[in-house]
Amino acid sequence: MSAHLRHAGAALEKQVRALEEIARASPRLMQVLQAVRALDLPDWWIVSGAIYNTAWNQLTGRPDMYGVKDIDLFYFDADTSYEAEDRVIRRVAEAIQGEPPVETRNQARVHLWYERHFGHAYPALGNSAEGIDRFACKTHAVGLRLEADDSLTLYAPYGLEDIFAFRLVPNLALPNRKTHETKAARQRALWPELSFVPWPEETEFEQESVA
View 1 (cartoon, rainbow, N blue to C red):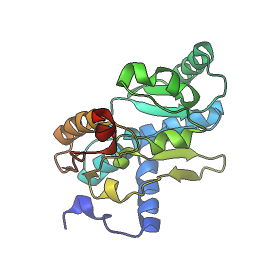
View 2: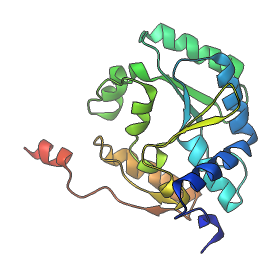
View 3: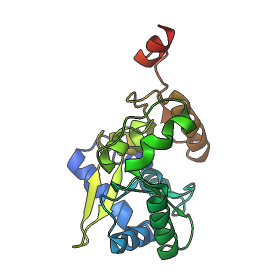
View 4: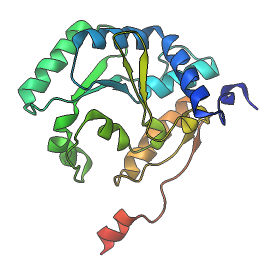
């Protein structure tokens, strides 16, 4: 087995420990986790690329934050006004300097703008974790939060096997085929170790559009 696949096929408990060790070994990821914890935002998570890219980088011997365009920060605030979100974005930007930058989004607001950007409706979320559930790729659906006692809380609704198997698997929760394919193309160029599971040729979304 190739060295970068050494955690593939392991029990979930062992994969969780491995991911936590990987996260703690990333100076930038831990810096951001500590800074966001200090901001005390409601229902917050660092999600997606900053986590799985960090795993791929460490497992393949690449530099910390190689290929990470930004660090996604989710939080959930019932105040869905643009002004309230903008205040939080500014607070985060002031508190966390350096590269890659942190991109902050109130998950309570996503349904208000999603259709304009992606062309299909997005049901309102009840919490930040539900936003992680809906990522276009199951492999990307992962979140970390640093607790007051310095423990890490992990949210991975589809498990960690796809991350450690270097496998990009579509999530059919929403009609996000284009997003899945676009992100996969970029990531496979950066991490050629990745394998790609294509979007099914026919899904219920496509059937509904034909009807």
